[in-house]
Structure formats: C-alpha cells, structure tokens
Length: 113
Length: 113
Image (cartoon, rainbow over all chains, first blue to last red; front, side, top):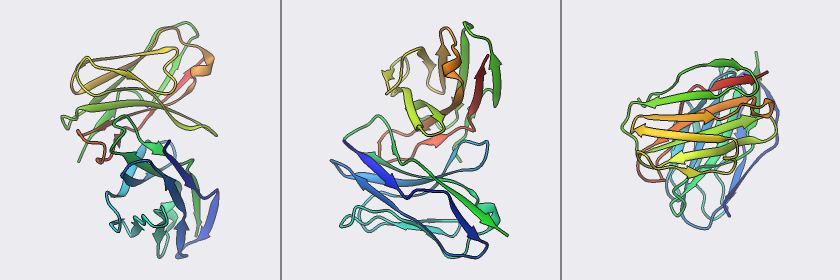
C-alpha cells in the first residue's frame, strides 16, 4: 500500500537558518504530493502541492520538488522565521485511491530567535 | 479561499452521552472527511463521504457514525461517548478528484469525562 516517511523530529533551528525536512514515499499509482502545516491548537493548512514528476510547489518561501526517480518530496526554506514554528506533514493522494490522504508522521519544527 | 468550519473548537462531554460534531464547507466540494489526531498515532480516517447521503468507513469507524443530508454539511456522531474518544477531531473537504488537496477545518478538541 501507499506510505509516507518523514524525517524524525523535533527539529530546532535558529532564525534565518536553512530548513530541510525530508519526505519519501511509496505508491502503487501516480500520486499527488502535499505539504501541510499545523500551528499549535489549529487544524492543518495546505502549504504547497505538486501533482506530477518534476513539479515544484512553492508558498511563503517554502519549496518542494516532486522527484519520481528518488520518490521524494523534501521541504526546504532558505531562511526560517520564529513564526514558522509548527508541525509539518508530508502527504500523498493516489489517483487510484479516491478515499483519503496518506500522511507522514509529522515533523515538529521550533525556530529560536 | 476554501472555508471549512467546525462548530466548536473545544467541547467537554460525559461518558455515555451522544455527541454531535458539525462541519460545514463553502466550496461545493463533493468529498468530506472526518479524522482524529492523537499524539504518536498521527491522523486516522474515521469516515468519509463522496456525495450526499453516501458514506464509507475509514480506518477506525467503531463507535462513530456520520450523516450527510446536505452537500455542505458533514456530521460526526459519537453514539455513546467513551473516554478513549477524547481526541482532536479534524474535518476536511475536497473537490472531485483525488489529485486535489483536502482542506481542513480548525479542529474540535473533544474531552470525554
């Protein structure tokens, strides 16, 4: 079945540091890939998405490229801010499976001033 | 922007009570979902609906039921609440095809005493 593996957290960075959160996936079909962010006490917000190989999703300074050859969708940001502190979830949606998203376990990011 | 509204942010109920969690979306989405989120267990799908009056079980439907009488509204029902149903409940909606993202509400933190 489908699965998503994220790097273990928590991750603690200083403000303006470079961020990478690794995400790899396995899927039987042709998945779409997503990054969601969850701020404390809130629901999940879509951060970015990519629907086919080599697509780059970007939003709020975050980027991720859909790499089919390495089955990866790593999240990156060049300079993090304290306000980026949150939990980040990688997820996939397989066109052959209409029912749900498959989520990674989430990565807690804390950015220190 | 898609708006998914959950009726309560926080809810406290007693064991044995019948509990209703309401979710409304404003984008005419066909698909709606209920998840619960627990530390260490991630997000788990309880039920989903792909059309009015249609529903399908997710991974953990036991102890829950759902109702979708109108396209914009998806209700989760705890028939007889138990303490192990204390959790964060997240509702989501999605347009027709699975390569579209799910959009989440802010969540309901439910405590069963």
